[in-house]
Image: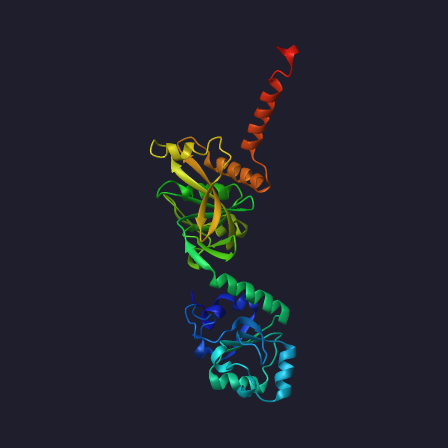
Amino acid sequence: MRLSVEALFGAVHDRLQLEWLSGRERGERFIDRPRDNDTAPKTRLLGPWSYNVANRIQLIGPAEARLIALDGSFDPDRFEYAPADTTALFLLSNRLEPPPALAAFANTHGIPLMVSALNYGELQKNLRHQITRLLAERRIIHGVLLDVLGLGVLMTGGANIGKSELALELISRGHILVADDAPEFRRIAPGTLEGSCPPLLEGFLEVRGLGVLNIARMYGDAHVRRRKTLKFIVDLLPADSEHSEALAESRLSDSADTRDILGVSIPLRKLAVAPGRNLAVLIEAAVRDQLLRYGGYSATRDLIEQQARAIERSRPTGPEDT
């Protein structure tokens, strides 16, 4: 995925309190370099402005602004790189006024110039996090993403299996909707998948027979959140002969099923859907069990070990027992 200056501004301007000072017409400049472009100058994604190191986003705090102002000019010959070619964005922190030399250089070369109300340290930390999230590998998976007991849970299953109805019941029991139908997942760090909802669908849940429901308005804003780290998958399967083997595999087995998404292995539990089964209670129990597993405890292993100890105690220990 490529990320332009315009797209970055649209995604984070509220969070980072950004104001676009000049160069809006060049917002199509890409922040990241194409991965297959070996001839492009080697640059860092972002960092403090200097004469020696090229950054796609040149961060300018009070110290850098003073240095530029003292120099009085922005002579490209003083740089060890070509700033007009390598720089996608000049970004000032602390609501700084851009030094005249910097503003003139940005205007001459059509480089976007922005300012943030955040201090330099906050801006650098938050910007790095947001860019990592925006550039992360992503995938859309059909299902419903919920926050159940603090755990990010993705419910999957075939069409008309009842995912949305089950999600509505879980929401009515106090759990939180993240995304219905098409949650988008990003690998934001090794081993970490973040799920989010497309902006147009945020807070909405479509339930067969009821239509589209606005969960925030019906249950309150606390029942909706924008994103959640995925930690657990519940796959809903019909309780029929076709799926009986898959459902039987998990009985009295301590080995957990997993599903690979973008190179991240996520624990998976299969649940049979049948009349009379309280699936909301079953999912809550599955989540509680998974939380215990994250803590190193397995009820199946505990039972097997207790049985082994009981068998050991019942065995004869010497000739007097024969």
